[in-house]
Length: 260
Ligand SMILES: Cc1cc2nc3c(=O)[nH]c(=O)nc-3n(C[C@H](O)[C@H](O)[C@H](O)COP(=O)(O)OP(=O)(O)OC[C@H]3O[C@@H](n4cnc5c(N)ncnc54)[C@H](O)[C@@H]3O)c2cc1C
Image 1 (cartoon, rainbow, N blue to C red):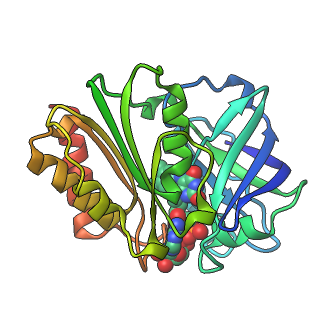
Image 2: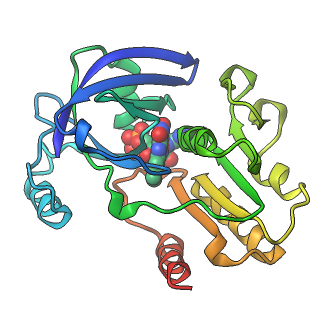
């Protein structure tokens, strides 16, 4: 792992802030679709550093060996872009209930956090279907935006992003914005759209919405291996809380779908 230093903080919308970082090792990271990484946020008066080891097992043992009171908070994020040794990450500001969101709301150039990843070991290719469907909430927007940018212009795609209200929209062509302020939600909007069973789907965001959307596409006849899905956050649970029985069942299904 290495440390990242904030170099700029730019509000994108009232609830989303874009940050750029420099740090060791960024030049060695390749590019692939949907690059996920772990960011480590220091507890007050403590360091975000864990261990130099690039081996995930060794690194995680070192992480767990840090006494809880000084162990940094670890949360998952997405590379919005990585170019010229500058890493860009977009953070949702969902309030002070979470250490990552609280940190992002106050961050300033010079602040330091930790980074583990992104690792090509977790790279997943985009599907080769005629139509690709992307659906998620604002936490999945960095991933959806960077995935859409990778697609050739000839690729048919449908993209749905649920956000609080129109102020949260970003300039991303072709997105059907779903506004909670208008009483809409991602699941009802996406399930109302007719799509063929030959689509490939990418789903990310609040776990129960992702679960409902995955069930919808499976019921439509979409093969499980053609549905990339991930619960990005859980209502009332933090990322430190243990997985629920549903989370574990889903993880097993994901592993099973990989071997289909
Ligand atoms: C692979 C992956 C990639 C991700 N990429 C991004 C990204 O690029 N940008 C980004 O902002 N997030 C991203 N997320 C989501 C992010 O990791 C979670 O929102 C995480 O919970 C934030 O940590 P926290 O410390 O702020 O809150 P936590 O301590 O985890 O949670 C505290 C409380 O806040 C609630 N909460 C958490 N997230 C939200 C939310 N978005 N809206 C409302 N309530 C919430 C929880 O239910 C809990 O009650 C990603 C998640 C995954 C798994």
